[in-house]
Every structure is written in structure tokens, then in C-alpha cells.
Length: 136
Image (cartoon, rainbow, N blue to C red; front, side, top):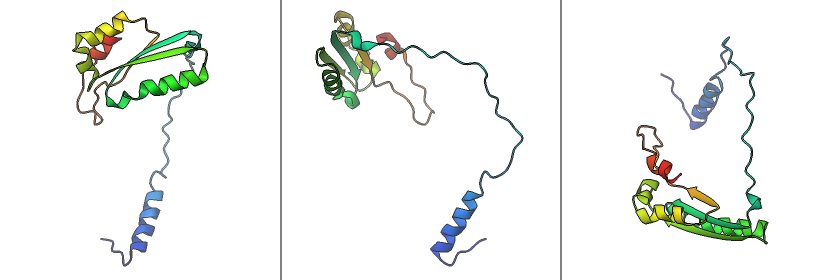
């Protein structure tokens, strides 16, 4: 077992040890694709005269409407913008209330924004996406 007399020795050893990681060589080549994919064209949203945006999301999107309005008003002062936010913990909760879905159907919307899909950071749980798919 290695023993260190001072913290400085420990950190110096750690630095040398870690810098040696990955220095081995390998004959394995990573395959490269020779095909090029054509990018999806960018939608030109600046042709709208009136932006009527609905936002479905949780508390993380509560101020998003104001931010979007500010950006559009400053970038396109001759355009009008209105945002509506429909809040809930997650999209599946929002969809479970019929009036929330009806707002999406009944408004003359230029853009919908959906935020709040459940996901697992660890990847151990898989959450259904049917609520988000229903809104789309």
C-alpha cells in the first residue's frame, strides 16, 4: 500500500496517475460515414404578422411567455405577440384536464410550446410520452 507523508505528495501522485490514463494505443479504428445528410430546412417564423403562442409547461416555463414576448417585440417591433401559459406539474397532468387541451384546439395559434415531459435522469425509469404526443 502506498503511503503519503504530506497532502502535496498525494496530489502529485494523483496528478501523475491520472495523466497516465488513456495513454495506451489501439489499432481499433472508428468507422466513419461517407454519406452526408441534408439538414432540415429552418422554418422562417418571422413572416407571421401576429404571434399567438401557447405554452404548456411546469414552473420552469412560468416566465417563458414574458421572455418570448420581449424577444419578439424587440426584434420585430411592427409585429404583435400574445402568449398564454397553461401550467401543471407535467404534460400528462396538463392533458388530463380537457379544458387545457381545448385551448390548443380553439385558438388561432401560430406556435405551441410543450415543456414538462417526465424523464429519468438515471435512465432506470421509462415514462410514457403519449400525453405529449396527444398535444402534438
